[in-house]
Length: 422
Image (cartoon, rainbow, N blue to C red; front, side):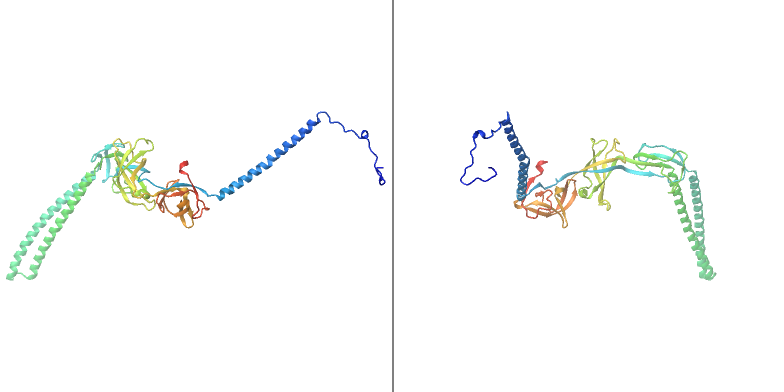
């Protein structure tokens, strides 16, 4: 019947309830299992939601926040420009040298007879240092004196001949008027008188030469004794007793002694051009040694070169320091601390605020209503983190640090004071 069609107006046969299959009962605890599966499925759904949907929303919120920030006013770090103080200290390297220093050479040949000083001895001006034995000089001096005595005798002889010639000329002049002698004979007598007069001049000149030679030899004999030219310390000694002394020979001669005056002592320092205008004789400075930095020495500028070296653009400066205890020695490395007042006080800004572009150097500052304004500047001395601005700023501007290239002229910004965070 199920596969064949029923005739019209014919009802299907009724099925009794007893004949229907009964549903099988759920196993014991089955309802709890189903509820657990439902809960598990719900928890899994919630977990997947938090894993995927929540980060996505956070990312969207962050993008919206960044877009909002980009649309807002840009924030920039700023700092106040300032002028350097009028009084400044500058620490410069220097070196010590003797106040007076000289090499002592011999001025006469001979052998060293005796030496009275050695290295490290402190001598006074005019003190005898050594004696040179020169027997030949004594003989030459005696010969020069004898020669002068001979020339003086010759002068007396020539003076007598001159007197005789004068008398002979006077007598022949009278005879010439009487005609007893010829004019030629008188001319011969007169010429003899003139020769005698010239011989007198020659003899006197020769005596002057003899006197000069005697004085020269006397001076050389005086150089047998070597004296100290000034008060100081013997720092070198290159001869010993019996050594041959050769004078006036640059290739063979060597210095006998080297002497230095170290009280006062000289400090030499090369001052850079930036501070050269503030250095002049009479200003004070403090000098310290690296080995003893807690002991300053009071120094005074004695002189300057009054010109800058072309190669280094520095001013050669010499300072004077009293050195009675001789704690400072020539050749030491020292630090010179100058304290002076600068007439021109440049503006100082951070190096990070300097903008380098094709049209030159400039600085971004805050203008009216926090609008960005660019000022062209000329730089001076670099201090590392800061730099001097010689022109372009007044000293009270608010300077933008690292403005970058995305801040056109007139951009309104929000300043953040970076100096307060230091």
